[in-house]
Length: 220
Figure (cartoon, rainbow, N blue to C red):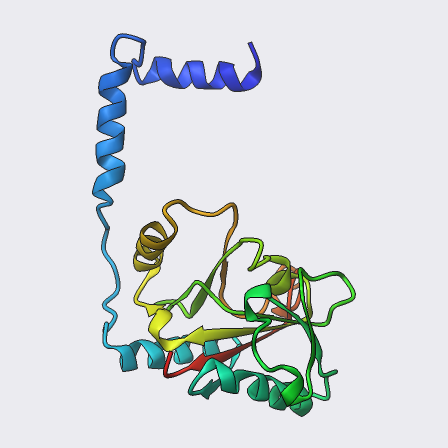
């Protein structure tokens, strides 16, 4: 018997689970999961304008920066302005699903691929954004590689206003409805990477990007 089998056997014994009642137990478990009952939650105004306002407020509190444009077609120019303002190179890696945008027209050199250790800027979209906590929800796939948001020093995320939801409950419900099943990786990003391990002092960029910039797409 392996350690895993030993642990699971002890769990089954404590639950009084055996081959005779396993099917009944499985039905009860599946019913509980399907119910998805929620506990107490903070009140969040579900109106679109209120969700946008709260997401901005929470994102700024987490040391992110925010810009707003109407559509994705305007986003490359917004990225160029942001990078120029910080004297950063006008080059980046982007999610393959964003490769169709006119990056060169805004003076940007981009490569649509996963990020490597030499890449300084990563540009992504998001599956949705959580207004309650100012959090981005990113779902990994070949067209949305997780490394683009994790490896570069600067992470820029496009956030359509139509994809802002109240809380994580709505985010997971949206994933179940649109994806069928959760992808291999789901990353939640609330501002730049940080740690307070050293003398209780907050340090940004400890184990990930130390800049997170949101480009809100107000008409999408």
